[in-house]
Length: 124
Image (cartoon, rainbow, N blue to C red; front, side):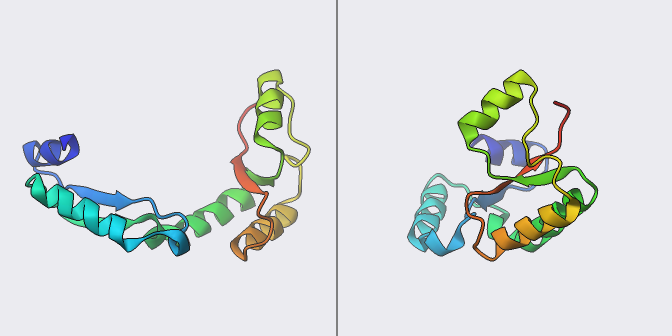
C-alpha cells in the first residue's frame, strides 16, 4: 500500500513485480488473488511484471560479469562459504578461469550444475 501511495504522491508509477524465479512451479491463482486483493483495497498497479520477464537480460548481465572477472560459479555449501568469508579465505572456485565459469553458468541454465550459484567477486 505504501508503494502505491508514494507513487501517487510523487506522480510515479506503481509497478507490481512477482518474483517467479522458477516460473514452472508458480501458480497463476496466487497472482490473480493478489491482484484481486489489491483491487479490493482500491489499488490498481500501473504495470505488472514478473522476474521471468527479465531472465534473458539478467543472463546477459551475468555473462558480462563473469567475462569481466567480476563473478564466478561456486558450489561451496552456504555454511562453509560463510565461515570462509568471515575468515577472509577465498573459495577454491574463485580462481576458476572465465571459460570454466561460463561453462558452469551455461550448465546451470541448461538445468545441470544445480548445486552451483553465481557469486560476485568482492574484496575478501
